[in-house]
Image 1: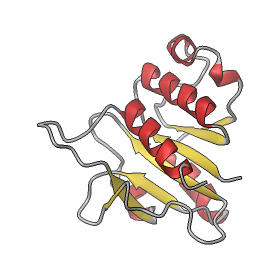
Image 2: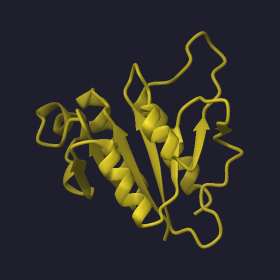
Image 3: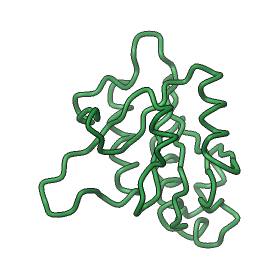
Image 4: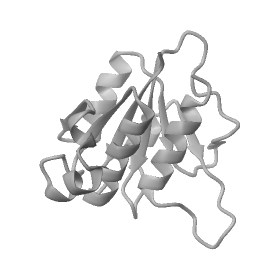
Length: 155
């Protein structure tokens, strides 16, 4: 079974984090790395929004995202940042699980500032969801939900 590791790079909203825990629980076989200022399940807003799913999901806290990325690189886990860059690939045209890949990491960034440049520089690929309206992005909780299920569609 394929596994997704969600890396939250300084996501500030406890409600978004709780929502991501609920999606992880719904999708199955998803682990979450909470990095930097990202709230952990001890935060009452996370637990309120996750509706108990935080108890079923394996998670780890890292003081900074660099530590989490270093661990993933050491384990040879492909790292895909969800960010609009010049080299980003359309989320529906992307091969998430390459041959013999059993786990991947999807990185999501701060609601206003996105993923920090040092993390983008260490990413294997960047993925984007095209926007047709005036806004350049979706809420991070919604984006995570879309990409988790898109990646697992081929599982």
